[in-house]
Image 1: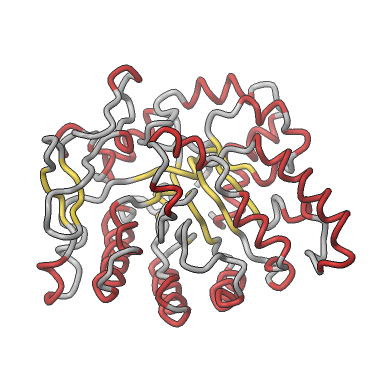
Image 2: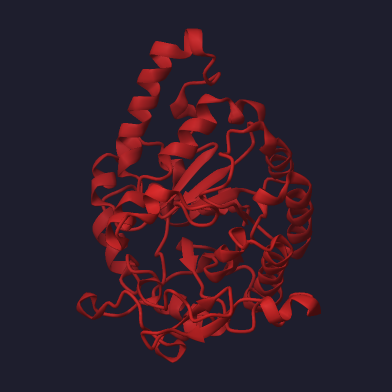
Length: 363
């Protein structure tokens, strides 16, 4: 397939039967399901009680800003493209997007589910639904990211990695807030198989895993702003501890973080490397050399980033729409592309819009 525009970060909200219909029979009564919340909206429940939060800002594509709602939406009120593959493809076509790399939503609860048998079963159920149903109509246009149970041991994780690659996975999802940070050597078996297969591992800000206490105290919109800078921590740790020296073919994507901050991050990392690599045993290469080779980010509307793009390896930058979240550019992608990168050389535009994503995900 010829790709001209790829969204390297789009989202789905799983349909009601995703987990109940696929987990083992003895777990079905405990499986997560969509229930009506106290505010009249629908949301996912992991404990059989009314959801603490119902659909809202994470499902508002196409809604005027003045009509945004933090919560309170029902399943009938949200766009079918949130959960229906054909409708998702229709919304992509309407926006001029050829393919989308798709992230899950409700399944993130599986990382913190106290019942680990249920949590792992729900991840596997989601992964099965993703490839057997949602992406099945056109796997060249719907690139699903299956869940990796990294907090349940590397034997379990590597086994699931191998299972989903056989199903056609072009990338895998790892939680943004794991129990152990990703520079810990415990993850080496995962990095090794990811490098051997060429399959990238992806994070999405802090989504998935154990949420820190400070983040629980952030207000919703404040947290949205803060998370744009969340890639600095895993990127810095993984570079300076030599993860990419041990696994030079490993590719790590952090989604929905934009890239204006990367110019300052690169300068800071390089300055620290110049001062400390003699005595601190830092990375074998200068930090900038890993950007666009091992480290990648997705971006949407980032006018600051485009002012600084000469200071950033553009091979690291993957365009996205963030459909259907509150900061989505859907259905304005054509307008945003023209206004933000229309002045760039055609070959650079192609790399940002599709070429880099094709290379990272081996499309």
